[in-house]
Image 1 (cartoon, rainbow, N blue to C red):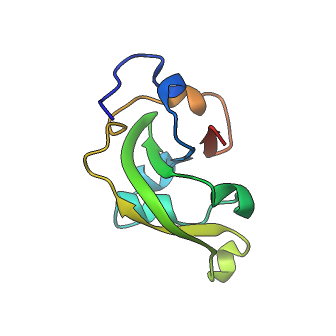
Image 2: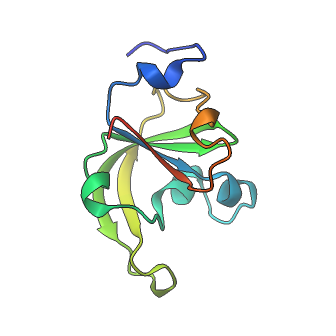
Length: 117
């Protein structure tokens, strides 16, 4: 896929994608990496999330990490009981990297957004 650069980027996505807004954990350096910020403790529908082709890590409206999820599972951390995690492969050459998807989270409190799901 070639890099899509325009303000209508979201409408050009054809795959099933879940976007996680990691701005707080990423800015506060609560975890060691973008991947660690993106992979853990999401309150999502397990059946729905397993359909995702890609996971996009978003900070301040910009995609800063792209992952191909290999496995989804309920966390074993008692503090986040019932939430989901994934193991995935980082895609460092994704055309999604650097794209702006801020309108997905504008004035929304939910840190999860689905595209084509």
